[in-house]
Image 1 (cartoon, each protein chain N blue to C red):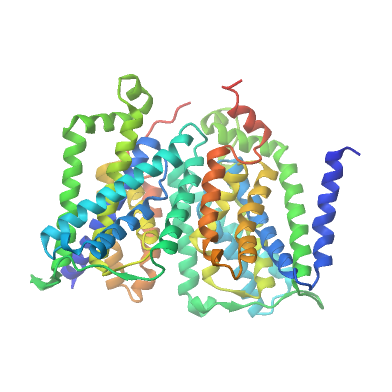
Image 2 (cartoon, rainbow over the protein chains, first blue to last red; image 1 turned 90 degrees about the vertical axis):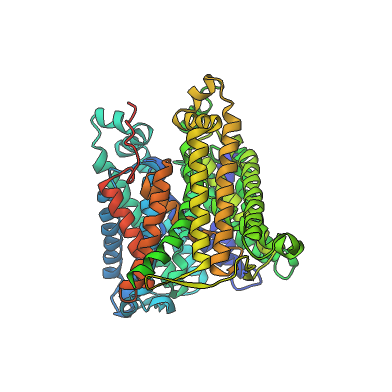
Length: 320
Length: 299
């Protein structure tokens, strides 16, 4: 066994075993923090399809997380079983994203960014204002995840569920990345016109990326809602969309492990600072440090912390 | 009623326009969204507040005080914007396109928290530089603050127009905005023009910060975010990179927001939904904004 693969297995074992050992001891909050980081990883992997591979700049991705969370909440209110709730919620988020996607196929770059931002804000405001369905700013209670007579509760259970979803997301991303579809996505990102002329059906491939990314966000949103058992529009502000975009750029656009690393850092740093600085006067400084870290990392690694091999090769071509 | 809403809308629109100009000037040259612009605006309003706290003598109530406050805030915000460009964006000029955006998000967080930590965590009341009196024009109630707001904004916009269209430096700015590389080859020091653009954009943002404080009466460390997002929306609506477009977009958005709040039932809850819906609708019909030029795609 090479040292690298040994380290990989050790890391995997740590991810799986350590939370169980922490159990309900003094460090139990780490399990919850790990779960939140995992949710950010699912979101970042999902957004990586449209932003990383296809290069569509998206500032409203949190809307589909919200669709998943509120789908779960509304289904919970009507006692819809999980096996119906899951396809229903995912389909809702996907349709929402396709509806947006079809209408913005013509837009490029920053115009796309601003339309998606507008869509994200519209979604949040609609949730906020439709009191009769979503209970408005007061939020909704959500029952825990229930499959037949088996109920999932407690941080540890959700941690493992989220870890499993992240693993599935990574495997799915890797399979897609190396497939014909993945290569077509990258071709569109590099030069849309050339890709079209090479016979790639650009619109279909963009919509496919939209669909998959909406599915990731919806699943993450459902798990979030059932885990926290409460949803309010406040969880889905513009800032969260920016955070996910930052994770992707900081980690390395289109790089699966880079994106995971970005989610780990940006999702984890504020929580870790919160715990370690608790009680000290530095607690209020945590977002200040967060901003400093963001700027410094981008200045020193503009291509991302763990860039995709292909992309790194491109960026260093001139120097070589 | 309509006239009244129109006046309110024009006031809001003039503030949005000033902010939108800051976004569009920078975008026109560097093709980047300067996310920290909303914080530059916020810092601008705090500069005026600081001057008022520590040297109230130089800010007498009346036009003189207002002009001094505007000049100092514009200088402060402009210089801040130049410093941000120098340290956070310039090193990334040849990096991938989204790197400066992330850097600007970081700067925005840093500035907001710096003011939060070291200046004030609360709303601070803004000095009344102009006595608030109400006029009645054709049945609509207009306050002196609104008039001052519109007059200052329009004055600044006219100044900007003259600067860009009729001075040599303005010409250099237009050249850089057309094609940065070629402008450099023609002997224009493009780094200096970029710094100048950030100075001008930041100064307009600082002025908008003062007008914002004057109009709403209080300022807070996070005041920049919403007007910043709206103003960026306005800049895109008008056609980003286009100066007239930014002004037009700002006024359209301001008027629309006020009208929606006034005429639609529960309108104040839905006004942002309407504003963003109109934006999406306009961009679907005209993908490069109202006055934006259609840029040919390179193949």
